[in-house]
Image (cartoon, rainbow, N blue to C red; front, side):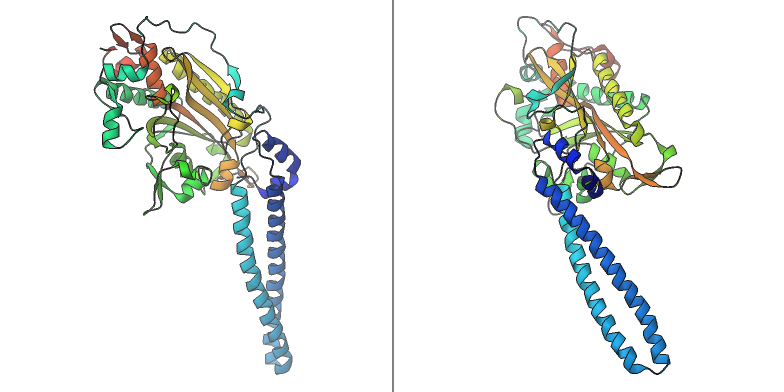
Length: 424
């Protein structure tokens, strides 16, 4: 969430940046500036009246002691008028604060200057291309949804029976490969200095609002209405909220956290090969890395996270490229996002497997996540997160790229976890 003062002092810069997102509602920014000014004016008027009430209350006491009841009564009437006005102002202040908060919640983050303009994912910029040869598959190559059925390792039909479309059931060597990937990703995060958490898989409204899922993605989350809890769309939500309402010291940086969770997303897919099999599902596993950083070091941290994700894909032997997202494809809360895509040799297309983002102060302002500098002044921290990695399309790419006429070879780095080297 942007700060009203930042919008007021940088209105043209904010509006120009938001145009990259195709956000052109200058009226909403004006409304925020006006509401914030009214909030300040109400507070000032209320404080002035309260000071007058306090001063006059002492004067009334003195007058009564001096036997000047008539003079005291006149001032008492004035105090009643002031108190009534303060009550009126407090009511207006609550309304203004609510309207201001609602307006702020509907303004996305300002993109980093390096974010390219654009409308859709077709306008994203290739930040790092894949320049090595792609895997060469045998003539009978198959997409992963056929391989899953042939080797009986992931069952989509059984998922439909138990739950519904988009809830795959992993079994046998498929389940073991999934578990191997999770363990491998967590071990690599641990080696990189990330503290592991096992967070709740449901969050309250305050947590979902704190990281920006609400109100932006309200319809995309599963909502347990009776308890007003939300199934998490990513481990980013509960892990980042560990630091909600926390004040750090500069010596606490960097804060590096990781966690594995299932993720739940209601987003509906269209028909076609691009959403078949594991390409788009409603429940999937993911290992997330989250960082809380000093503002001066957050972009260096972003580069470090990009290298971490790239290192995982290198060790898995999967071709990948990195995209810098354009304004139209940028997430609501992000200032800068890099997407990783692996190349599916059977589908002959790129599959997104990770997003690594810097949110700057957008989330921390909602979370009230601050730090004290050496002069004891409070500042908003920067938050970052990245998928390291999301499993469905990683699984799909491994199955497709490592297929042979005699079975699916397990990447060497995973064999200590799977304890087998082939699915046949």
